[in-house]
Image (cartoon, rainbow, N blue to C red; front, side, top):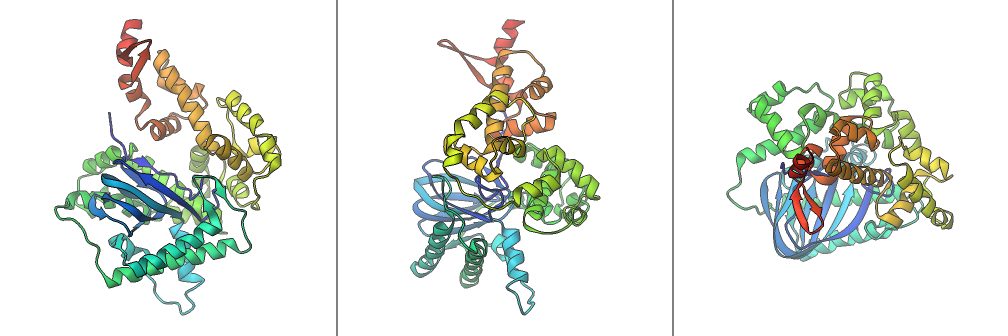
Length: 430
């Protein structure tokens, strides 16, 4: 069974895909699985001791460790000596970086904001530095609320500008801290592993160029087959599928936060033209770029009594219709609420947004069918509501961390007091 890295969601918030930033507090008391991050995040460790690998390089975790993770970096907390408590702030680094370079850079200086952070992602703060950083985090929390307890506050006047300023402050302080001291890093790191981990960041930062395995092979001095195998081993995606995933993630950001035309977005993300990006976007997201943009650029609305009163109806509707071609916009319209309200209702009731809930229902049903029938995997994917095998496989892997085929072969099946391999069960049926 492959041990794929879990690919984190590309959105900053489960409540509202338009949010630039979310704040949360997390606890870890045991080693984690590898995580491949599509969105930037700050981690600030307040308690505990352990070790974290960032793109294969080891860093010690102690109180007041400040970490900056950029898109398409891989992390794993592989040692927990004392339970860890940390602040997690997920944010859109592309938007914040561009804001710093354009809106705030009145002298038109040549700014290099993210590269130094990528080279030195860990800072061990002094008491004075910790006071500064925790103060900024507290202001962000007061503005955005705490994600995991569904304490999402009503958006205040000029909130987006306020939060952007705070994120800029964090980036500036982090960059200044880097110039004052070097990150302390363990010895014995694998140069090859670090080099291979950079493949994802290279692909993401060169999306506007034509990318091929041959080109990447020449950049990293690795064979094409070795690169393909590494990408598949880490993510479960082929080179082409991962490249399209990155392009769509970038396109979603540009659709949400800019006024660029579809042709301009296609050029920036490596698609041949507007028609090409529309086709791939529709296959991956389930709607056209234009419809997506209209949905997620609507006015912000808060969760109220009206939404609470229909929560049971929405959840019942999803349970009864998840095998159909459900679209979030259609379901929201059916109940006369906004997309944001729909996500908040679901997060409050079942702790999942619409897409996660829909995939949860479909994949759980697929697991049941994989265990109890001999239907082809392709047929099962269609029966539970997926339009393509790729979409089924991608969502199955995201929730179960293995392919449907591996699930059918290796998962344990509980039958009364006897636990047997599913593979054995299918042979007995024959």
